[in-house]
Image (cartoon, rainbow, N blue to C red):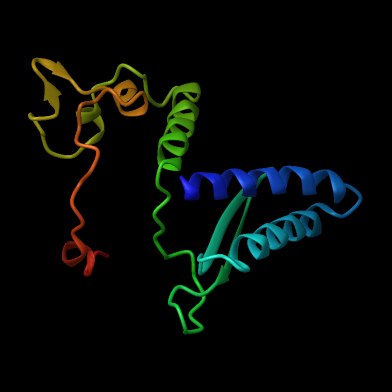
Length: 156
């Protein structure tokens, strides 16, 4: 819940600041908005790092702040992996919506269409799990997978 609240606060801050900075050049305006949001997010909070990617007018900009390890000065990079919690549902749905609008996928597509190998078990009864099931949370896949830190240590 705290992560969702922090993300909503960030979006709100970005929205309010964009109006206040309207007389600045676009790059400076975006940098100022993200810098302020990152400082507000990290300062005085238990969060150590903040990373953001912004796509505007076809140009992608990346921002990284803080440290990835408490007590050390190891700044985050574009290679760091963050848990984004429940925002995953919104983010995944947004990406899927774009893919549908671009005609790259259909909501009723069987998810196995996009996976290597067969995965015959990705069905419920005789009904395949479809893309729509993943975003409306009706896939019946387990929602609390066990932590497997050993399994992820050597992931490329």
